[in-house]
Amino acid sequence: MSDLSSRRKFLTGAAAAVAALPAGGLLAAPQATAPTQRPAAQPRKLPAAGQFPVKAISSKNGLAATKRAYELLMQGKDTLDACVEGVTIVENDPNDMTVGYGGLPNEEGVVELDAAVMHGPTHQAGSVAALRNIKNPAQVARLVMRQTDHVLLVGEGALRFARAHGFQEENLLTEKARKIWLYWKQSLSEKDDWIPPPDLELDPEIRKYFGRPTGTIHLAGINAAGDISCVTSTSGLAFKIPGRVGDSPIVGAGLYVDNTVGSCGSTGRGEANLQNLSSFAGVEMMRQGMSPEEAGMEVLRRVAKTTPKRLLDDKGRPNYSLKFYLLSKDGRHAGVSMWGPAEFSVTDKSGSRIEKCVFLHEGEPAD
Ligand code: ASP
Image (cartoon, rainbow, N blue to C red; front, top):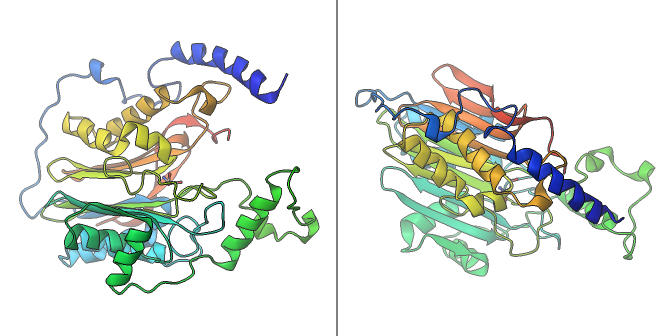
């Protein structure tokens, strides 16, 4: 029996087993109950004007970014500008191989970046997708929002727009990213003409990235006036088909903010968010009265339920990672993850720190 057919057979049984599980799975946070079991939401009292708790939250790779964004929020800078400036630090960092300069390339070895910004006070958004040669796509996305009548520019058009605004083109593929890509390509198949180097000759740093590492930065900030903005920036799925666009630049999928409710953004399998408009869903659930944690967990369960069989493990659980970062208007926040333990970054008046995500399943995704 081929691997595929034995896997299919196994999954049919697994799906039935999952259908019998409680909605939250075995490891769901106890307080994250299904919405139908929830008493009617009580409106929460918001802080007085000018006294909202200032904070910035992000994916784990954005600790320095939240720190910078928080400083700027405290100085009274516009919430979106504060978030973009934080994210720029990570986009410029060649050691973060999931965002901006140094990000892992597509299957042809070319770095293609996606980013989106959303400004709560004006409910405006801007984004760019499959942008090549420009290391700060979040800044370009902000210009799409502020200086065009559009929301999303892609590929060559996005590049020309960036050039028109004076962004310098540069090669975003670092030597390390090129070597990781080359090793991936050489290891793909025994039926092609590419052969990986002998194990002994392979730099252990490169081997560390074997597989398809995932990552992105999402960062959201709230200021003392209670205004909220957020940004998502990524090099996308490593070794993707050229032109593939993930969730990150799609408003409602990779990020969303409603200034009266809160924000949600995501890292992980973009296709799952594109099919569920997960960030929009997270904000809408908070609007209905759920806490950031409850809303995030509910979206994870919804995504898990609609996951196709080919992406379920032998216990019927999604075999990919997915995280949401949620901020509510009253200043509460949460990070939630399909798999855990997992972490995210926060800076507020108590300082900068890594916090733990609540998670749906324990361990690592099987894929
Ligand atoms: N969400 C990103 C995408 O699908 C990738 C990631 O966060 O790992 O492009």
